[in-house]
Length: 195
Image (cartoon, helix red, strand yellow):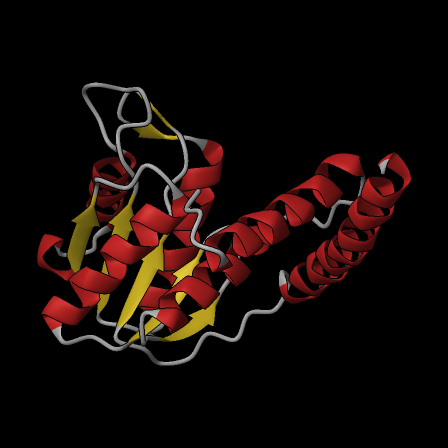
């Protein structure tokens, strides 16, 4: 009986592991592609903020989104992200404030500040887009993150392009783990587990 159980576990886990590796390689290959084009809105995924100031990662995402906005690729921006443990500030509000300081009119920015996970945030963004009559978006985040966000927004009926924030290419165990983690997160979402 133990031998049969081991065979079953192997028969299930080996193809699954192979699929996760293949998917993580696809996510990695797409993580450097900027296919932004004229859209209804630019969606900036949140990242840490420090006492009302964007972290270096969030600042890089916001600066990149600002450059797309300045190029006229979209007339509106959505900043995202909840409190993340900070009772005074949300990532979405910090992003909005930063963009206003760069010169973006406040009426061009919508804030989504309830999201506490990628899936929660992206579903909230799709609802905001529907209410505003928007159907296309450019997603700005780190390259490894964009694939999953695109797939969720596409599932919600949106046309989505990705534009990763500029970053120096890196390779190593940590970077590989980011792609694997996104592959697992995507697969969990596909079976109804939202992280």
